[in-house]
Length: 147
Length: 376
Image (cartoon, rainbow over all chains, first blue to last red; front, side, top):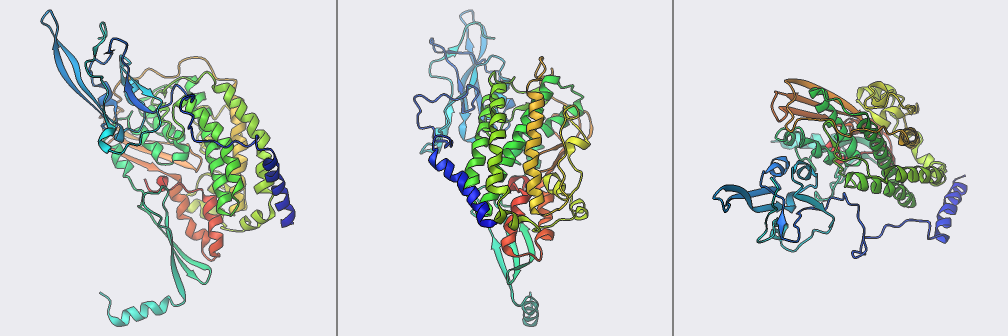
């Protein structure tokens, strides 16, 4: 009885041995150039900049408040417009990748869609300090018309 | 301090007994369970689970998070049914705030829950067979599970800790490919489920190792508070989806899977048959997702009224309860999670006492323990 049921199972395994195309072995995604991940895949938080090096972050800190782990820290400053008006703007958008759990709550909280999730999935670095990132590019400023 | 005579007396009581540690593994590995087993020859006399290796004080942590934030933490408890854990928490907030969830969100939540249940049982099937020495079923089970994780990745954005449910509905609408991919999965699953029967279920060696091992009677299952497939394997009518239907479970047709033997094979069969019932639910709902909103309109800051609220859902392991005490503020005053794994583990000593140590693996395998769930 035992031997017959073993043979039955072995027949199944043998079938796959001779039909290697049918079994799905998931390979590590080494094909980075052609890899297409789902557009909703949560890799890390990035800030989108357009070709004029402008972003849409107003420094409202909604993402900072929404984050459960204290991953985001926004340092704001006051820009003075040509008319002499004071306007709040971001100085540094600090993102701690080492604390992030990719829960997506900051993206949901952002009223101006300034941040989004990027699709990169390899985060290992040799130095821990490299995981703390400044998301706004140097010299970038807020896009006209974003309030 | 013991005196000399007392030490001599102590050892004479336990003469011939051998105390061995199953585990602990390295604390950095996930899912660490430490069992201190007292053996008399090969017979188990006592089992003492030692917990605390993966304790993160999740309940206390949740008390400092807002009602939107605390949901994501529950994904880290029973990570194999993280979606259903999130659902239980969102239910509690919706119940206390009296938020009416749109019908579309309800149907999608049920679909996702059942997909999660199948994925969890698939992983259990592979791991269970591997515990008993069969390596190949692990790969076959993961092949089907991979299709589900891809569906989750497309719609929720993550494969394991989804965090797709928010109080009032869902984070996103469905991915356009969702229905097509789920249908492809259902087709593949129905075609391949016979393989599990050939390889595992109908295997006589496998059956002999499971039948009559780790017997838990109906009375004991109730007194230990065993729920889910462990309780149903002993004949306890404990499916929350049937007793306290939530979302759209009262409108779909499915059977509560019950076995009466109470041994490891009964628990095994409950899970295998439950996967087919989940497929049945998915087939009924996949073409009937109503149009409309996927999220109810809620305030930016949620403040449930003062009071105590309890909700429960059926995860892949059993009843998951969320108890929240609200003081009317933005964070909960106290949170208590009733995790199914803890109660199921407490029955282990009763089940394995007097059996051989080789049978312990079959008993533990069919309990389907997820340690972060036990050790929050």
